[in-house]
Image (cartoon, rainbow, N blue to C red):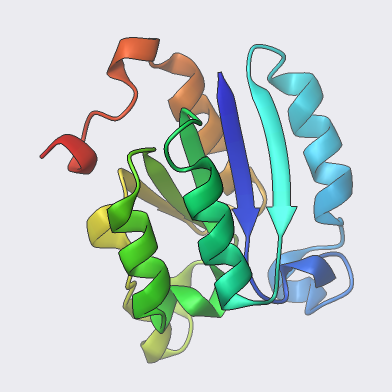
Length: 151
């Protein structure tokens, strides 16, 4: 089962950026751990700081992969274009955030993506990704896509 983990702007700085909020591990190191812990999933990882590149990646995998775990970073709160891309694809998307967005700036309380995602996981550090992968792992293949995409 192919699952893409897609990270948006500034998440390439994990491990060095605002360690009190985002921790000290790089995502690349954490991804290696996820690959070991989820041998039944075919995981791939992509990160970009550019909105259009993220849209292109959603279009590329959004009709062939079984799931997308997406941390859109600050674009979560601003990007109609990424929201439209999520809405346009068939692959279910789980929105994740490392920090608790509701304990931060008020503008972060609004997600442009949530209405078009299967679910949202926020505030569990890097473990937010693991929780999203557990969701996909536990579903039977025919159940993938249940939720908002089939509403």
